[in-house]
Image (tube, rainbow, N blue to C red):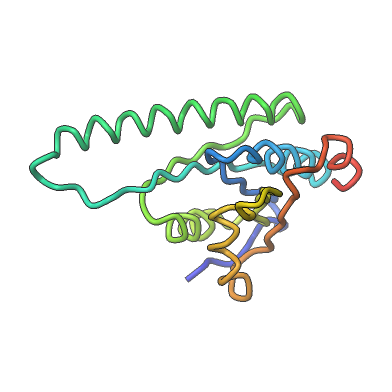
Length: 164
């Protein structure tokens, strides 16, 4: 169950949640969220989800190495995204790394931080579709606990500036 949003109460500030993944369009979501943070006087939370698979006990040593490599890659991706946000809006975003089912982890992060006011995703404009997370969220939009903003991966910085 999602906790009450408190982002506009005294002592709180609104935050925009962005998923930093391996898609080409993550930069568009970070750009929009950073611009939004400037205008709203808020912050940005960047989330990287590492999907885990059932680990066979026999391969536990290999699994631990793979997990460490996944965390290293997650931190590198968040470093790039945080650098981008800082360059856009002179902000230092919060960074969160989670492991497990993407929808469960996403909802848990939202539930844990009552200042998260919105989720921003960027959609792929290619023939392969908008992206796996957007497809996954399409079924949950009617019951999602916060507003969802989907930015076209084709929008330029200038177009996003005009919208945010």
